[in-house]
Structures are given as structure tokens and as C-alpha cells.
Length: 304
Image (cartoon, rainbow, N blue to C red):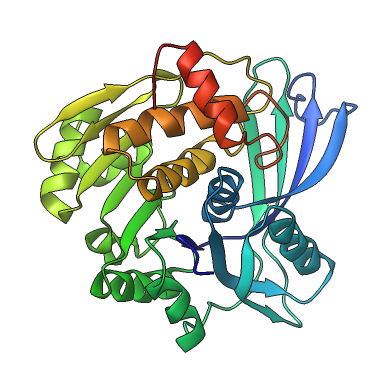
């Protein structure tokens, strides 16, 4: 079966450390718990789309070691296809340590990008993309992402760019995206504008996507499609762990596109999925299924 959503980007081993509060410098603090989980913007977004019932594949490169094995098995656990993943010996994997504060419900991340080489986009990987409806990229594995995005557009596949990191060379990727979803920080920095509303319009005119959606954290976000400038809300949730909330939003948005939703409905759907995810620990484990999201939105006055 062909996958509806294919992703290319960072695939990370996250070590999640739950603490009552952030420690002061040069002190010790007992963790409430620690756990390991797969992470990475597109990688987690792909898992979110899969948990919402969409067939997904990931394209990338992992290390031939216990970390690589863990990450592949984590994809398989959630039903994500792994035929597009190359596994190479002798490299250091991408890993991170994420501190989760109970006091503030925020997270702080320290990461090591490792030294894995870029992914080679061979014919088998191109076929995965050609058969998909949406290609998700996040600015990591940049050369592969740029080649894949150009190939996707040539074959009528929508390119969704999770624009969270201001990585070197991203100007090569921005003109190739159809669905541009930057964080507010990214949007203001790249556009040079003082407000998100102005930034959305500038990014739309400069890079010509079909839509720009700027995420604004606890304030929800805005959408601009060339005609409509609209806001979407966050939905009420008791936040336990916000790590990966943005990644989940992007994956849920991609799932909404596959389901045929309008851009604004995709925003509401993705916002609800992201909010529900924050009620549990772990970027992937807490992503709800489709029916849970549908019922949650209905209880909050929104019908899919």
C-alpha cells in the first residue's frame, strides 16, 4: 500500500528527564523520571499522522547501533514504514536530552547532531514520494530535502515545510514548499516584519506557497492563503509535557490534508491534536487517535 504522507528530516533519540523545576547552575537535582523516546520534527510528525490513521513512511539515515535499532522499532510500533531508511555503521547518531519542568510545564533541550551523512535519494525513495499525497520536510538532511521537494512538486505531491529551525541553507527549501508552517520566531526573522500578520503576507508573496500558517504557541496561530487572513485557537488542555507539540501539529495538519480538510479546518484539527498530546509525557506516546480528537473538538464547539 502506498503511503499518503512521507517525511524527510531529523530522527533523534530523545532522553526525557522530568524534574520538579529547573536546577540552578552547579547544583544537583533528583529527576522524577527518565525515559527514552524517538524524536525529531518530521519524524514525530509522521508518527502523529500515522496514529491518526494515515499511512506514512519515513526517509532518512540512521546509525547501525542500539540507537538506530530503537528508532526503527519505534517507527514500526506506530505503523510507520521504514523501507526508505538507510542504516550505516560507524557513525554517531543524532541524540538529545530534554528537561521537562513540572513547575513551568516548559521544556529545555540540549542536542548532539552526530555525524551521519546526508540521505541519498535513490529510485526506491523517489517512488515512495511519487506515490504520496504529502511530503513533509523540516530543514534537516537539507540536500536530500531540497531534491525531494523539487521532485515532489514535479509529480504533483504537496510539500509541507515544518519551518522551526533557522538552519543554514533553508532559503533553498522555502521556494519549494506548498504548505509553509513556520514558528512565529522563524517567520519574523525570515520576513523581517514586526508582526505575525505582516510576516505571513510577506512570506506568501516572497515564496509563493499555497498557504502560510504561523504557529504562536499558547496563542494559537494565524493562516494566510493570499485572500483570507484568519486566526485559529488553542484548545483547553492540562499541560504535562509540551515537548514535540509543534511537531505533532505539523503531522496532524498533513493528516488533515489527506482527509480533504480546508486549510483552516486543518489548523483547528492540528491544534486539537497538539493540545491533547500535551496532556501526557512523550512527544509520540500521547498523540490521540482520530475519534478522540473528533469527540474532543465536538465538546469544545467545533465540528469536523
